[in-house]
Image (cartoon, rainbow, N blue to C red; front, side, top):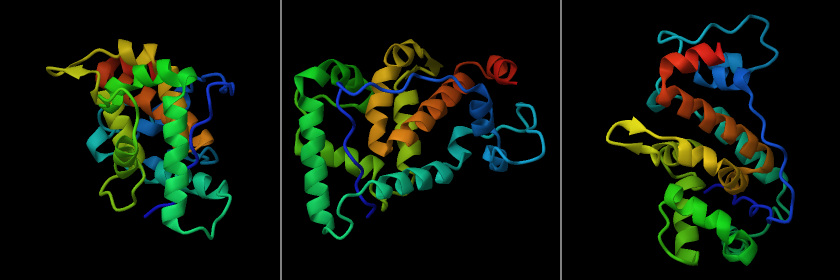
Length: 208
């Protein structure tokens, strides 16, 4: 199993300003992921059907590995048994998610994460861990998280991303579970994928 992440920062900690990075979003959507390297000397191709991959085909390994490196780097006790690490992490997440200062954020997040309980218990935290952080899962936890957020805005084959935009700050806050820096990239992943699903032609025009 992967090492558990640090809990999200509390609401008292000021988050970095949200950035809109169209060049990064464009490269996320390209089939050729080598253009995610900012030092690549050749110019990235324009977005079009031939150069863009479908979400189902997109490889999130780079983002998953970066998140894991970031979480391991902030471990306090690397020799601590996994069960103890998980218990410490789970308790911290429950305390954070159930804090009065964070209730508004959590209420906004519940529809995206399909949480129905009033208070977050160890059962809900374990489900979140299995879905997003367990290395035995067949798919990247970050890709699963992005899919959950994006597909929560779909109904009968159409997408309404208004709720996503209205609650983007809360989603960024939650995604700090993947790492503080990783949450910034996840924000760009969600933005890129939602733009592509909402209107591919407009997405290509805007990001190109």
